[in-house]
Length: 79
Image 1: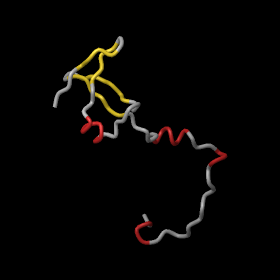
Image 2: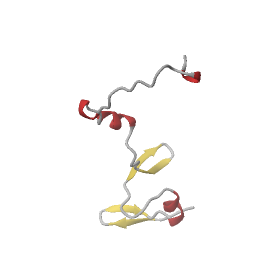
Image 3: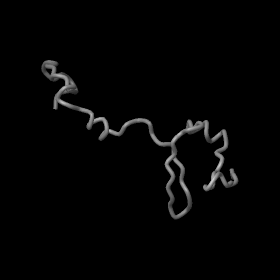
Image 4: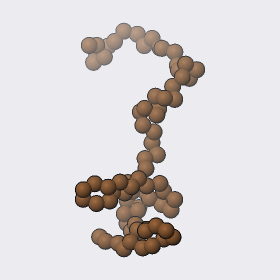
């Protein structure tokens, strides 16, 4: 599949075919990461899911739960 680069203001824009946009949930206003490698340009949708590091950074003493005693390990829980 190919597309044509076009001038948009002071930049060059590329239209993403609808079939590809739907496959990757790209809609008007979607944030895309642009990078390059030795073979060309790469566009990727920016992940909306936080990374483990971002989730861990949100843990504070105020929002931590207390440890719960679930009893002795049983079956495959024993190691």
